[in-house]
Structure formats: C-alpha cells, structure tokens
Amino acid sequence: MSKTGIGLALLAGVAIGAGIGILLAPDKGSETRKKIKGKIDEGKENLKGKYDDLKGKAKTSAEEAYSDIVSDLSHKSEDVISFLESKLAALKKEVAKY
Image (tube, rainbow, N blue to C red):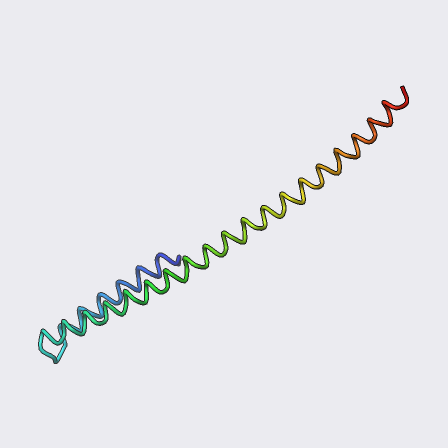
C-alpha cells in the first residue's frame, strides 16, 4: 500500500472514530465539540510539524544534490582542461618540428 493510501486510510479511520465518538459521547454537545476541535487542532499541528520536517529534509537533500553536481562538474572540467593542455602541448611539439 502506498503512503498516500495509508494516509487516506488513517484519515478515514479518524473520521469514523470521531463520528462514533460523537454518537456514543456521554458529554453534552458543547463539550463534545470542544473535544473534537481540540483533537482537530492537535492533528493540524502534528501535520504541520511533519510537513515542516519533510520540507526541511527535502531542502537539505536538494542542497546536497546540488553540491554533489557542482563538485562533479568541477572535477570533470578539471579533467577536460588537463586533457586539452596535454593536446596543446603535443600540438606545440608538432609545430616546433616545422
């Protein structure tokens, strides 16, 4: 099951549980609504925290990938420069013969 499927199943379970809780609640309606609002607010904060963590990890991962690419390109450009310098030296030797 994908992460999206698990998330949807979790949300459906929470909604069903909340509905059953409302129907079977021994408290007054106003108290039940306060409890539900509190749980929803807790859920929002929890999701926001998880989102912020994921966003931070994604940013860090992207920065590391960028750094790796820049480093790799730097090494490749050094290799190309070395190759071209060796070819230039060989051409200078050839030209010096004439």
